[in-house]
Image (cartoon, rainbow, N blue to C red; front, top):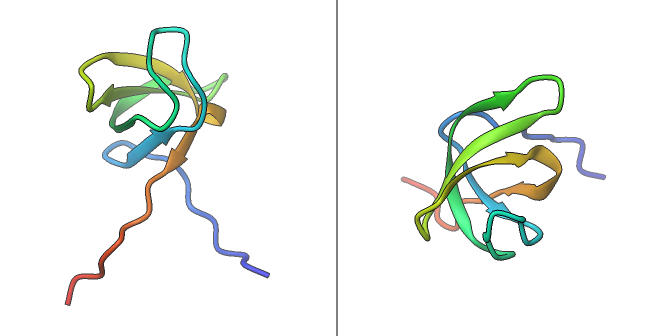
Length: 70
């Protein structure tokens, strides 16, 4: 059982795990640029396709690094 958890924070690379009403498609990657609300757990995300939107935390997944630095 994996008990290691990671949380989203400013500067993290994330991916939308569902389509967002602002026109962001599922699977689009972006960078968290700020917090959009602490009660509802929303993040300000600049997506690679161009739009910057306030996205709920449940609609975002952290991107995992593919390669380790040596």
